[in-house]
Length: 191
Ligand SMILES: C[S@@+](CC[C@H](N)C(=O)[O-])C[C@H]1O[C@@H](n2cnc3c(N)ncnc32)[C@H](O)[C@@H]1O
Image (cartoon, rainbow, N blue to C red):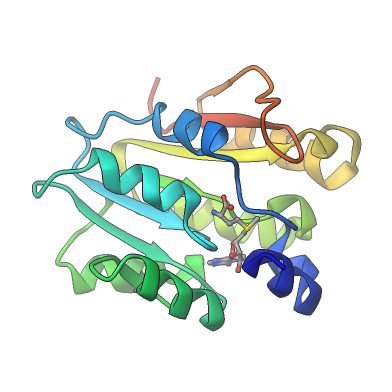
């Protein structure tokens, strides 16, 4: 049984997926990011680390990279898989505290796998408020949503919220090689 599947059985609403993202989706997500121009990268909800693994291949010692994972059992897995990775066992909305710990005002890039479609509107807004507050003025937010989100109210609402919070949002073509297929969104604070 996959490690994420086990966590899904324990807490489906927080885990949000039966399987980790495919290598294709993870590579497509990191291809949205310029790791030379952007110094500070934060990942929300790394899970078992498919996206993390691709980020680690592309960063260098000038980048600052840390991850925030709510599930303590997955934090143990991540620490074993990536001994040098910085993982905070905390909710994404506390990012400010960890930026300060690194003596940083902002993150340049936030990559998120949080299952936002399973959240209520106030929880979706709480995450977006926190992202807007903690992204640098030229910062970018990258996330994905499964195809099913298109057909459910909370998914449609989150897509509208992205438009409300960010002046510029792009969406990739559907990445079919993932279960379920997913769209990647890239949002900028400035046009
Ligand atoms: C759908 S899984 C994705 C895991 C992995 N990034 C991938 O692409 O396969 C979502 C992950 O987000 C974590 N998570 C959910 N809400 C969170 C929050 N508020 N802060 C940090 N992590 C959260 C869950 O524990 C889970 O590991």
